[in-house]
Structure formats: structure tokens, C-alpha cells
Image (cartoon, rainbow, N blue to C red; front, side, top):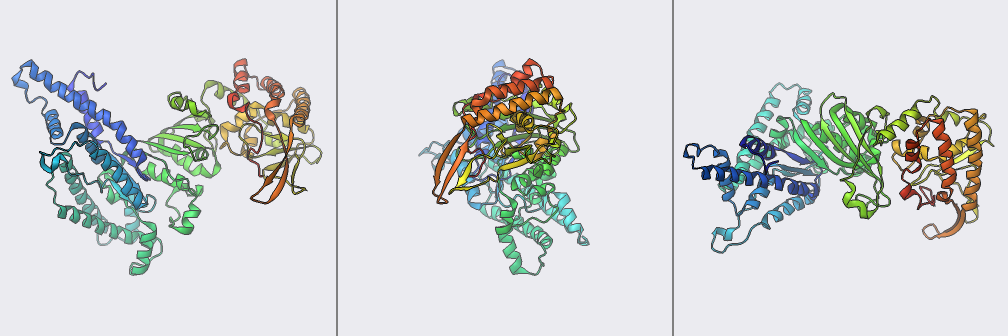
Length: 621
């Protein structure tokens, strides 16, 4: 589009857009995401500069001297390029200074991030012995772009500062003075940055030091206000210093005043830490209650996501690598509500961790969220299915993502993984029935019993008996094994058939975190019993149990870690797929599924399921 635009207006608008866009990684670490962003923006900058040059060349070739000032702004930009070692150096330097921002609590990581960006710049320079300083331009100062501090502790915006100071009766116009100082600092920052972009090296070192000193003074003033929220007394110097060292407060309101005052960052990206807050609270820092809507989640992942959304401009975009559980567990309900309240649209792609995974060496089940900001919205929620892939499929993974509209199927605690009209139709048919499956778990007859295992990967293991599991000759019951007494007038083997079906497995993966099955899945799945279906499902359930037993294998293992000998029964569920298919056929008639819908369910994930049995799927050894 840029390379072929015929009029300068479009080029001019696009150039102003990309040079002004602000992109933040709120937990940037060593800068992997910022570095990737640099590579995305570079060709856009380059295409704009190339087209600017083409417009000027066309004008000069035309010989129309009356319009030589027509592209004065383009000439100025290209003149700035000439003031640098080469065009690529100018582009990378401009992106780093104009577009990229990062914060991390680890000072070492921040220094590594800055170093990586500097090395990228330095690699573009070819030394010239005849030139001043052998042609090497002083590296830009990006200390005001990439900052060390705690993303979660500090005042993010004007409102939070005003609330904190206003609660102490602002009789001395403290808020007004802080705002004025922050605005003055921002003007100095902008001038400092612009001089660097234009190649002007006239900013003296003492001016930079003076700028840092003014920022430090303003930080200290806000830190003292914040410390009182932690119960510290202002005159407690020793306690204040200890708190300062452990909490590393970062006040977005003053650190990036111009951006925050202008509405926020245009784009927020990153990979928040998947860390339980209780661990941080015990050994590092704490966050006062009420600072985050998502505090019930108890995980820094949710806090960082909430902070990121709060820092977005009204029309901003956010893209974070999270966990599948972020959108499929009740503990994350607060964050899910926040996303729905403040986003216009939410796109969630869901990735398994077997057979391949997004991050090698990390056994996490990841989800990528992309959202657009709009407060008080009623967002559209789009999702992929639960994606499993082999390592050789990685290159095509993102290019082939398919999303479906999950908005009307959202339930408290879960954004369902539906990616096609077929999946939506099956859900509608299941929900058209009235009886939650969990109502059948209310029996009193100890003989009408089933056992299911909460943890799973490729199959749901449900049995009519306790499997063999002995440790040093003594019977042992896995903590993952749950016993259910089925409603007296419903044979347990009929329920075993339902729970063993591909239809229920698909439903479970659609709503769960794909690690453990919970009561919510049993409550959400609807099944209205009928005499005819019950008889057939009971027969198939008995056949399935017999087949499981015939194909099972008892294996003895020596667990060196516990110095124990374990004898355990393993079930090769994949060998019983023909019976499971028969069960699915019965349920397909029950739910009035079409042939296409039945085929979808029977073949769901079959490429990866058939190579796996139930060995140790989520069970204790």
C-alpha cells in the first residue's frame, strides 16, 4: 500500500501515524517483544522513506519549479536521514526513541534490553577512518524509554494520584504542583528526544543529569504519598528506605506523563509472569487490597493484564501471551469481567502443550489474547479451538488460525473454544436440553457407582471399578480419582457411556483449562434421559468396561524418588475407539446432530488422540 500510493496525503498520514505510535511491554525483561516490534516497524519506516524520495524525484523530473516547496516536510525528513551514518541506522534509532517503551522490575534485565537495542544500532555503522569519530554516531540515550520499576506498584494515572492526595485534604495544591512539574518534565523529554532523532548532539551531559534529578525528586514525592497507603509514617526514614528497596514503585503518571495524559499507550504487548501473588507477597512486595479488580485471581498474570488495559489509549490494542486457564477458570472471573467491560473485541487463540508447545522447555498451556480498548463495551469474543500440533507444523500454525464467535456461549469463568459454525451448532443442541448431567450424580446406592479421573490429556477415563494401584503391596487411591454415586433410577453404565464419549470430551475441552475436569463441566453439559437411549447406553457402557479391562496392562515400576514399588493398571483407551464411536452415534441421535456434526465430533482431535492411551494422564504415581 505504501509503495504504490499515488498521492502524498496517504503517505503523509501513514508516516505521522507510525512515527507517533507508542508501544509498551510492561514486563519487558531483556526485550524480546520490543526487539520483535523493531523488526515489524522497520520495513514500514523504510517503505515510507523510499516513497518520499520517489515523490521528490518525480517532482524534480517534471521541471515544475513553481512547486519545489510542495514536499517540504518530506525533504526535511530525508535531510534528517542524511545526518546519520545511513538510512537503516536512522530508522532503527527513530523507532527506538519514538515508538518503543518498556518497564521491568529487574534492573539487570532492563540493562540487557537496552544493550540489545544498542548493539542492533551499532551493527549498522561501517567505521570510516576519515570521518569524525570514525563515522560512529553517539548512541541515543534511551533511559527514559526503557525503565526499571514495578509495573504493579505505583500510580498509573492522574485519577489515582488525585484520589491518593485528595484523601489527605490537598490544601497546598500539591496535585496541581505535581501535574505542572510532570508536564514541564515531559516538554524537556520531548525536546531531548527530538534532538537525538534529528542528529543534534547539542544536549549537554549536565542537562541530562539535571533532568534525571528533577524526575527523581518528583518520584520521591509520589513515593512518600504511596508509602502512607502501606501504613508507613512519612518521618520513618529507615522504614521508607526498606519499603522503597523491596517494592520498586513505578509511577506511570510521571514517568510517561505525555503518553498517559494523552490517553495512554497505543499498543501493549508482552508475556506477563505466570507467578502466584502469594509467593511474591511472602518474599518480596505486597499490593494494597482494592488496587486491582483481578486480585481474586491471585496471579501476577492477571494483575499485569489489568494494568496493561488501564494504560491503553481509548482506541488502543493489547496483545499478551497468557495461559489457557486465564479464560477458562473461575478464579480468573474478575479479569474476564474486566476484559468484557473495557474491550470492544477480544480474540483468544488456545494452544496445547502436547505434542508440541509454543515455548520449548516450558510446560505451559498458552493462550494469546488480542483486544481492542473501549470502556463500557459489550464485546464480541472470538476464539480458536484447542489447538494441538506437531513440531513440523509450527511454521503454518499462526497462518492457519481460525476463529469463531463465542460471545453467546460465554459462561461465568470461561470463554469457550469454538471456532466454527459446526461447533456452535453442537453447543446449541446440547444447551437446548434441560437436565444438567451433574443432577445424575445424586445417588445413594453404593453399587450404582462410577469412578472418574480429573486429570487428562487425550481421553476422559471413567470406570465402573477402582483400578489396580498398589504401592509396596498396599492399595492406594489416587487423589485424582473421584467416586460418584449415580442417581438410583439411572444405571451407572449409561452415565459412563456419556462421560466416555467424544461429544463430552469435546465439550470438556471447549470450556475447561484442558488440564482437569471440574464440577462446572458436569453442570454445564445437558442430557435429558430417555428410556430408549438409557438402555442402549447402558449396554455400550458395559461393553466399554469389558473392552477396557481386556486391553489393560498391569505394570510394576520402581520409584527411586520415594523408594517405593508401584503396581498399576494402565488402560489403552484408544483401542476402544470403535465402541466410543457407537456411543457417539447414539448421543448424536439424542441431540439431533447432523451427519456433518457427528463426523466433527467423532474425528475431533483424532490425529493426536489415537496414538495415546490413558497412561498417567494427570494421575499421581
